[in-house]
Amino acid sequence: MTVYLVGAGPGDPGLLTVRAAEVLRRADVVISDRLSVAALLELAPAHAERISVGKAPGRVTMTQDKINALLVEKGRQHVTVVRLKGGDPFVFARGGEEAAALAAAGVAFEIVPGITSAIAAPAYAGIPLTLRHSSTSFTVVTGHEDPAVGEDGSVDWRAVAHLGGTIVILMGAARIGRIAAELMAGGLSPLTPAAAVRWGTRANQRTVRATLATLADHELLAPSVIVVGEVAGLNLAWFEGRPLSGRRVVVTRTRGQGSQLSAALRALGADAIEVPLIEIVAPSDGGVSLAAAVGRLGSFDWVVVTSPNGAQRLLAALPDARAFGAAKVAAIGPGTAAALAVGNIRADLVPEQFVAEALLESLPAGPGRLLVVRAEVARDVLPEGLRARGWEVEVADAYATVAAAVSQEQRAAIAAADVITFTSSSSVERCLDAVGPGGLPPVVACIGPVTAATAHRHGLSVEVAASEHTIDGLVAALLRWATP
Image 1 (cartoon, rainbow, N blue to C red):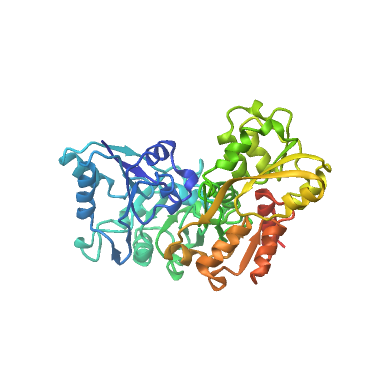
Image 2 (cartoon, one colour):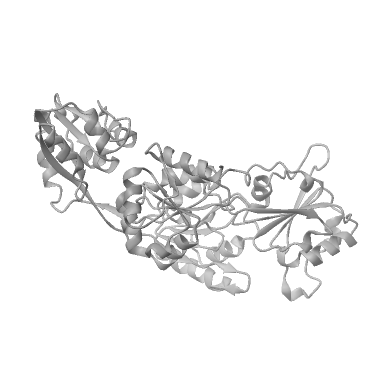
C-alpha cells in the first residue's frame, strides 16, 4: 500500500484539499502532528488507528527519527497510512526527511500538498503578501534556526533585509526580538509595518499589528506567522470580525448530524467543538414493530414521523414509496420533512411550530387509523392526545438513543467552552450524566421549548432559546445573543 504525506492546511477544515480528504476517508492509520485540526481526524474511518506525534515548544512526543521509523513500520504493513501534517508537508514541515526515509526503505509514498500558513494566515488577517505597485515579491524564512550553528543562527537576516518585498517568518515568535534587530541592522526602517498572526485561519485567530521596532514588545506565542513589510500596514480584516469570532461552542448532536450546525457556526467565526453525547441504535425489539407497520402502511389514514432519525429508519425499512397507498404523511419540523424528501416522500402536513402539541392542533379529529413513527423512549403527549381526539393510534419504535462515551479530553473541552448547544431533551440528560451541571459552560442554548423545559427541569439556566425550532433558528438565536 502507500504512505501519504498529506498537508492538512493551516487549521480551517475548509482549506483541506479534495485529494487530502479522499485519502483520509480510506486511511487505516493516521499519524498526525500538533497543528492538525482534530475535526479533520473525523474524516478517517472509525476503525482507523490514530497516532499523535505532535511537537510543541519545549515538548517532544516523538523524535523525528522515531517518526520516520514509525512511518516505515506502518508502511510495510500493507495498509493505507496518512501522515497528516500542518500546512504543506514540504514547507518547513520535515516532509522531505520523511519522504527520504520511506524511499530508502523501499516504501511507496505520495505527497499531497496543503495550503501553507505562510500564505493563508496573512490572508485571513487581511494582509495581502503582494501588491502590484508596492510589493512585487515575498520571501518565506524559518525563524526556527539550527541550534547547532550557535547564537548567531543559520539565517543571515541582514541579507534578508536587502531582498525587498514582503518577509514572512514562520516559527519565529520566540526569537522575534533578535530577528527584528538584525533586520533593522540590515537596513529596514524601525517604522516598517509588522504583524503577527497566531493560530491563523482558526476560530481563535488573533492578530497583533505593530512596527518592526515594537513587535517584540508584544507577547507573541507559537504558532504565529510574522509578516514584515509595507503590506502589513494594511488592515483588510474580515475573519476576526465575524459575529461569533472566538466563541467556543459545543455541538452535542449525534456523530454525523452535528456537521450542519458546526458548519453554520464556523462560518460565523465560532470554534465549533463536536462532542456527540448520544448514539442512534436499533430499538430494543430490533425493528420488529416498524417492519410490521411498514407492511401495513396503506391501512393507515395518517403516518406521523417525529424526527429526522425516525424518517431515515422508516425509509430504510420501506420497500417502495407506493407502500403508503392513500395514507397521508405528517412531519414534525422541516428537518424531518427534508429527511423524508430524500426518499421522495412529500409531507402533507408540517405544523408551523415544530412540537407535538402543534401537530395535535393541526391534524383533523378522528376517527381513523394513525401510525406514529418515533424514538423508543419519547413523550406520550402525541399518541395520548391523538387518542383523545378519536384516533386509533399505533406506535412504531424506529430507533433508540444511548449514551455515547465521553472522554476526559472532551469533558475538559466542554468545561472550557463559552456555550453548549442542545438539540434534544436526551442530549441534555446525557450531558448532565456525563459531566454534571458544574462541568457545563456558562451559556446554555436550546433548539426549542421542549428541550429548554428539560434543561430547566434539571436546574439549568437557559440563556439562548430558538424561536424557530430548527438548526437555522438555533444559529439565529446565538447571533442575537452575541450581538445584542
